[in-house]
Length: 418
Image 1 (cartoon, helix red, strand yellow):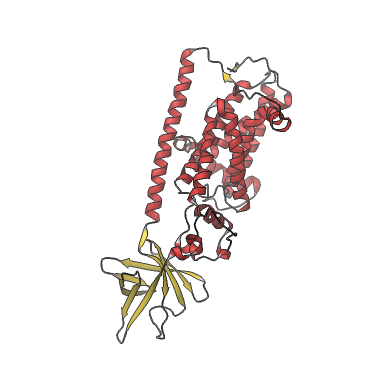
Image 2 (image 1 turned 120 degrees about the vertical axis):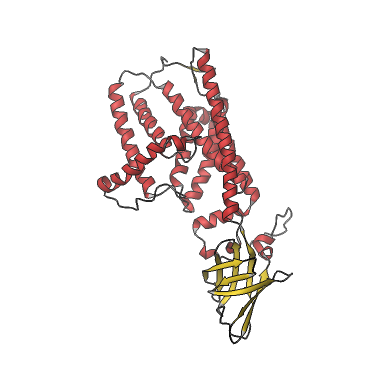
């Protein structure tokens, strides 16, 4: 067992000590400010810090950087907001100034092996918890979801880069399961003996996440970059050994990170109990988060009573109630909106109200009675003073789309690319 003592005889160079002091302050500051719900219950503890940052950063941006942005936008679905990027500079400056002052006040210190252990521990848990969280929601297919009806009708050119990436990944449940399991393997970081293996996995995982975020314009570039850099940081003490093993092919040993020396039994037990409690709280929080996410998805993506893609049957008669250039209508979610595709296939969103009890639907500012045939087709009826209009909505089969129809094949005599 590798034991750390505060009085370790190891002597660090002046540059290494300066680099550590800067890294210690900056990394801890980053983790505290950009925690992203990683540490259990930290969101409640960090509220004073969050409020302070949300007041200070806009002031710093306006008065020091002379950069204006919408101060009401903080960290939301996007982690690359102006607020987030501007926040990095104060953290960098604080770390730089702290490193200089620390170096002056603590010139005689020979090393920081003890503090390095705790910094490494904070990084290990930060990276592991974050990737486990992302891995779990992928396993349950809740982050990138299967193509929706509106997406099946959406031409490739209408997709944003992020929308294209999300649809590509979300299409395959098996692929989500695979990458989710790989991200969950970051849990190896939680144990000293498997830390190196865990860090190697998280380096590969973070590079993949970064590539998607950078090249498909996904707004989590900052945090994904931090995950990669933190994973590399964990591997820095092992670079020579890894080079020797992978490049020269010689045998090496990869000892686990040194452990602090606790000369009292109660200290060792307290540390073990604290870790156990942290893991239990994280597990409970993770389970609750999955249930809440699933509940929100079910609530916001509740299917419409008329769920489906419908072709509006064209007739020789001119309709007053429905524009002649409407061709397709999509009822997807139980909301007040439907998607319309017109003659030139341009998308437009229209308000809709469906009264299932009265079999009524309000569309295009007209109220129709509707009936659903056994074959799924819908007939809308609108009575005017001088005539009655009947609109037939012919239900389309989503499984007829090539993307949905084409399944996995073990044997393919020729590539099937369309």
